[in-house]
Amino acid sequence: MDVYASAFPTSRPAVALVGAGAMARVLGLRLAQAGYPVCAVVSRTLSRARTLAEALGAPVASDRLADLPTAPLVVLAVPDDQIAQVADSLARTSRSWAGAVVLHTSGAVAASVLEPLRARGARTLSFHPVQSLPAGADAGRLDGVTVGIEGEPPGVGAGIELTAGLGLRYLVISAHAKPRYHLAAAMASNLMVTLMAMVQEVLASIDVDRAQATALLEPLVRGTLDTLAQTSPEEALTGPVARGDLGTLQAHGRALCEALPHLAPAYAALSVETVRLAVRAGTLPPERAEDVLALIERMVAVPLPPRAAPPPAGPATPEASADAAGPLPADAERQRERSHTSACGPAAT
Ligand SMILES: NC(=O)c1ccc[n+]([C@@H]2O[C@H](COP(=O)([O-])OP(=O)(O)OC[C@H]3O[C@@H](n4cnc5c(N)ncnc54)[C@H](OP(=O)(O)O)[C@@H]3O)[C@@H](O)[C@H]2O)c1
Image (cartoon, rainbow, N blue to C red; front, side, top):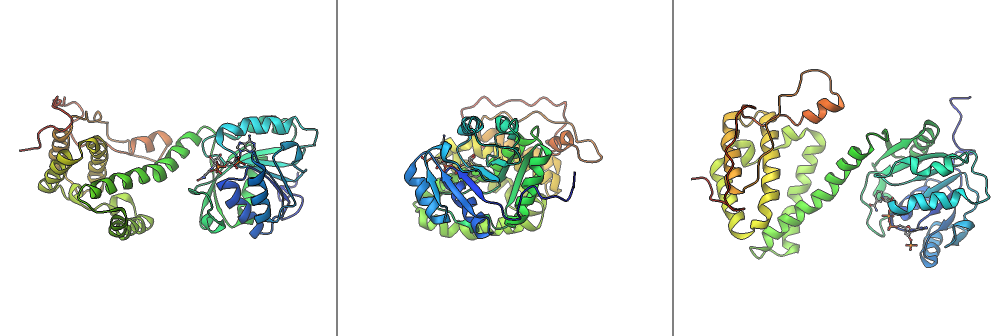
């Protein structure tokens, strides 16, 4: 086998899209801009298939999978829970799948869901652009984006070739690692949105409306992301936990518990991780960290996680990187007295 052979018959093979939602639109536009002719859009709703096909200059628009033309590259951009069913239906059609490349775009579902097509000779993979794509987003939304690629070697090779054609980066991941890979992406995107919703709720409680909150927070959040892009979380961390400023933390805790007690558990959980980070960064001495943890624990009756042993020295392994979160600062043997006060117990005195 020629190891330098392309996975595709031409450098810009024709593409057939299944799905007409956010991902199909963005990937379809990016493919079309990069010179891949989009020959069909097939989706559940004919009007949506037609709208996207028109935008991409695709000659075929349909709501029937049987109308999918034979194309060297087939993209399944349907909801996660529909991928298996669509793959199964396509594998039952009479067309030949030998040599075709079929990918789905889910970060959570393994490429093995495409097994019926692989069994018929297709090269299969999951091809997951790590980006959040709202409805109506355009191709530029993929600028600088990395694609998580997972699957059997022939499919992975095709995926890598496709990222080159689209001007994207890639990261090859195993099926075993995929849940944690997707967990990380979901935490970075979804939990950040939740955090910002919490922050806006705090501001709303002092009559700062959403537009004012956005104006207030945007430079701060962008500045923090800029710093994080250039350095590590340890170096990027600033603020009262990093400084061990108990007075400020006490005031924050009181304000939260008085006005927005339902946010206290999430605040406490994130603050404990912030303590761990500050200790790792070396800005918060372990003894001072104990005081901060005790303050957090008095604010909310959230049991702190058990003390972990220090991570072993040596090269990073998946297990070691799980430990790399690092220990909480106190003696692992020490039994912590639990506070049994209500969710917002008395603040430190
Ligand atoms: N959006 C993101 O931010 C994002 C990011 C990374 C990965 N992804 C992944 O990309 C995939 C698609 O997500 P999306 O956000 O594009 O979803 P979406 O906006 O809901 O679009 C899904 C599309 O699939 C069509 N569809 C649903 N069931 C179908 C079926 N059985 N046969 C044919 N078409 C069907 C829908 O039909 P209609 O024609 O009725 O609309 C719709 O056009 C998912 O695997 C998702 O995890 C999404």
